[in-house]
Image (cartoon, rainbow, N blue to C red; front, side, top):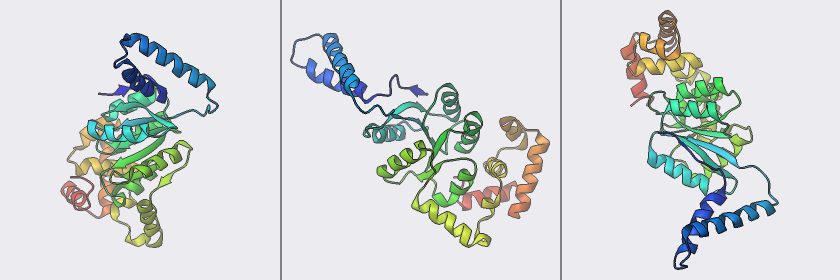
Length: 263
């Protein structure tokens, strides 16, 4: 279920904490305490000299615990806040259509629409939208194809919280963020193009269809999801098989499992 936070100000959480402390043992009504705290908070905001807007972050991950961890990383930073959360690809797209975010933290393994499909739609809806991919898959497996598809950065979920924060700030400024692992992968491909793995030579659309075929989807299902004709999907399938020098869908699935592209 998607979550839209009612405010993107640190003052809201501070108010709640101060209100709880003030109410304890004071004998005052909680509503009175909250009114006093909110009034004080409003005055503090009025006198603030730093008027730089907060970095609004949308966290998109199907695991509540993971979203909670990312939410804490963001909440600890004075210049950013979690504006909304989504648990599926469709919820993420809906939120991006409805409001503006500086950065979308997007997981690859999402229900109903995976991160690849979700990224593609986001970039169609808002081409300028900053998207930072967070994945459990190693950078060498997906990073190049997702950067080619429009992602502004790619991080493995095993990275340090500080790196996530740095990446959010970089993407919010309109830059791309390349971790050391991603930079090494790109450098290896430049230095040894002939050694690049077959799936890295696929176009954005070819890679998208390859992943769906490898996961066991049939052309009619893929055509419906991507709003293409079955004939067009079949043409892409033939290209993928030719480029990767494979014979059938079973070979695609075996390749994807062997290279860690699907589980």
